[in-house]
Each structure stands twice: as structure tokens, then as C-alpha cells.
Image 1 (cartoon, one colour):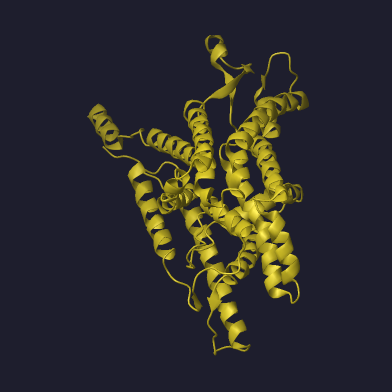
Image 2 (cartoon, helix red, strand yellow):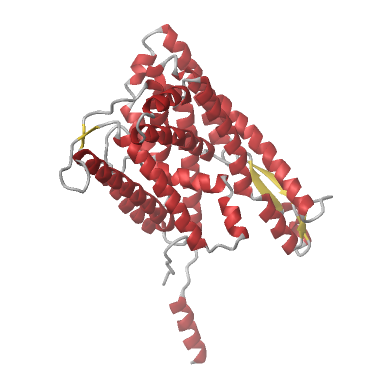
Length: 429
């Protein structure tokens, strides 16, 4: 019995797990490789700034508590990906027939620029030892080396995530899952603070209620979908009733939370880095950072708007009404009482937007609004972010479940070439 094994989508589950274990081990090792010339604990950050960066840290696999090779995590990669899509650069590139390799290189350039900005911001929070070797002053030489190390680490993390997506299991979600677990273990002691007084206990019960709703929705409706009946001109009449276009009730999943946190943190990195590099800009940067945190009305409102808008954006991006309408028209498929082409596209888009709006309202109410109390209860940051962390965790687990199911399905087909050859030789004899 000879089984066909291929690298990629139809590789065996064991092979994918081995590749993921290898990439995961590299990621864990890199998180504990210290950056030379940096020492001490993080300094010079206000409470609002630290809160936002620590929350974004959960969604990007970074580690801002301890300076290491992989401290930036997937933050630059995720920021570059969403900026590329959100600014419609990808659409412009397709209209101009730019090769995919050129687009990939351009995305990496955007990622490197963001990594340099985040490196400067992160580096300034620690004490730096001078470096006598180099063409500039001891301090500048050390800063250049540190920025290069942080940026190289971000590129290496993005490469590991890409290779895990091609060969392993879970893609970038495995690194995010690891960060969620580590952060939860590090912050378990805050539960004692949450139960130390009646004032904290009321907030805790509200967060618990939000977590219960997130779990119920995530578990029972995580795989639920809206099925739009499709007529196919070439299908047998006995299967007409089972032909449909599925649209998940939560088309965007947990992606809006991860990308909203990443995007809301980018202005902080940019402004903070500008305050470090540009002489005299530190005071202006400090004023901006004081109003951009989640504990301020402006920063909190901006996060909720991003969360809601990205839910609709990712819903449309995931379903792609234009592509679905084109495929249906080319294959002779249509909805009842809906004309092919533009009418079908609008029909699909309206339903995707409706489901995305409902999903966005759910995310805003149960995962976004609890963050309003961060300014009042800074010690409960881990507790207040629990609903969105659970949403991300459930989204990651659903993705892993579906990928494992697809992998097991793709490896169930076995081809017995030796048996076929033996039967053929017996027939000739």
C-alpha cells in the first residue's frame, strides 16, 4: 500500500505538526535571546501608553516586558498587511498588473519601515550602553545596532509565520496562541486584586458576564452560517435543494480585534519614535500619547470605531461578493429572482454587511466596552481584556479545528498502485 504524501495542503497531520513544532521552538528560543546593549526595566512610559501597548502585545505575539530578539513579534507584519489592504494598494496593484512578487516585496518594505519605527520606540524605554565601535557617537552606534537587531527579529518572525502557514499548522495563529497563554499565566495574580474589594468585585462580575456571552456565541455560533439557495443549470434535479452559498454569521471572526489593536498602536509607535529622533518634539509627542491611550475618550472611541469598521471590512474581504458573483455568472449559477452580475453582487454584499454589522456590534459591546474601565481600574487590565482575549482564543481554536479537519480529509485518499499493477499482470497472464 503506497500513500501519496505532498508538502503543503495535503501533507499528513503528523508532518505538519513536526514542522509547526520546529518553527514554534525557534520562536520560543528567539523570545529569550537578549538584545545586547539594553538593560534595566522599561522607563519613560505613562500609564495610558503602557496599557495600550500591553494589550496590543497579546494580539501580535510580541513581548514588550523583556527586550529580546522577537520583542516586536508579528506587530510590523500585521500592521503592514492591514495597511496594504485598507489603503487599497492591493487593488491598485491588480489594476496596474503588478506581479505578485513585486507586491510581496513592497509589503515587506512597509513591514520593515514599521519595524524600524517600533524598534526606536521600544528601544527608548530602556537604558542603553554606549558602543565605541562605529562611525558615530557611542550612543548613536548602540542605537543603530539595537534597531537593526529588533528589525531583523521582526523579519525572522514574519518568515517563520509564513513558513508555518505553508508547511505547518495554524500559520501565525500558533504564535498568537502562545502569547495568549503566556500573558494569562503572567497575570493570574491580578485575580486576587479583583476580589479584594466590593468596588472591584462589581467590575469583575460585569466582565464575567461578558466572557460568558463571548463563550456562548463563540462555541455555539462559531460554525453557524447563513445559507443562500443557489440554482445551478447543470445540476441534477435531485440535488437542487442542497445547493447553497454559505456565509458565516461572524464572517470576520476575531481578526478585527487583532488588527484593530495593531492599528491603534501604530500611531503611538510613530509619534513616540518621532519624539525620540526629532529634537524638541518630545513634549508634543507626550501630549499626543496622553490622549491616545484607551483610558482617554479619544483613544477609546478610535479603537471602537476601528473595531466596528474592520469587522465590516474583513467580512467583505473574506466573502468577496464581487468574486462570488463573477464565479456564479461564469458557471451559470443564480439566486431566485436575482439577475446575474451586478445585481447578484449587491445581493451578496447586503447580506454580508448585515451580518458583519451584527457581529461588529457584538464585538464592540462585549469586547470593546469593558476597556472603558481601564482608566478607573488600571490594576484590572488583564481582567478587562479577558473578553477580547477569549474571542481571539476561540477564533484561533476554530481555525485550528478547521485546518486539522481539512488535513485529515486530504490524507484519507490512498492509492494502491502496487495492487493495480498486480491485478493487471494477472489479467495479462
